[in-house]
Image (cartoon, rainbow, N blue to C red):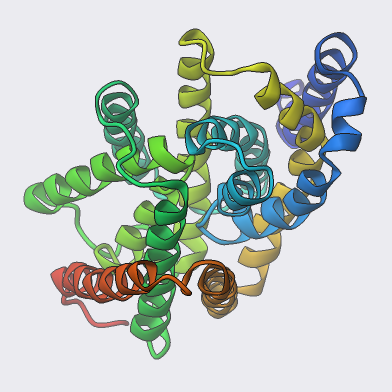
Length: 326
């Protein structure tokens, strides 16, 4: 216990130290410091991205993916690989902050989600290519995230739920549906570098009556574990190229600092704050998408269809749990 207590308290600091050593080796011997100067926009973007991506269940990839695909003009597949690699640092740092501050999480559902979503990721990586263009993908998920944020806000704005992880019993059929949804979330994550965190948060809130203060750190841990597993897989498959490493050299110091701040800040301010921050974030990113793409009627119609179907799906999931707030 004498040795474990200081190590337990300093886990996040030790992780940051080793990340900085790795970053220094990467920058000095592989990418060079010029890559940091060339990608300063990405570094600044990920200051906000790491903070809000950890403070809400949308992940840092929700900022990194559009920056890379629309400003840097890199392919969506390469952007997804970077998002996962970047989140393996930022979300892992956030997970250690959750661990050291003993924030409540749903360990049982986290375990099932990580297993099934990683299987979905594996399947999509090798057998299910992304069916959308970069623009279509952005419109699709911006619309889904808007519906998701609005649905959570509308469903929970008048509820008072106890901060617990044991409100709703996880029975057989409910678990099977949960597994199927997480499997689909893993497929989405292979396309855009995040998504399972949003799906997991949504199901915890709407199907299992978890609070935002429990669901958010739980979603962060899921995204950290999936990002780590996916990044190891991408490295072994040769999907991590020099450009991805250059982007990492510009973002690792940023995300390991700002991501833990986000989760601690949001949980400290409570469930209502998380809902409002989430809604504000999805509205802002949807407005940017609208300005960029809705001059084309096809994208506008796609957005309207996705929002309508997403509301139906999300409220159907919410109706599964008929328990009233206590």
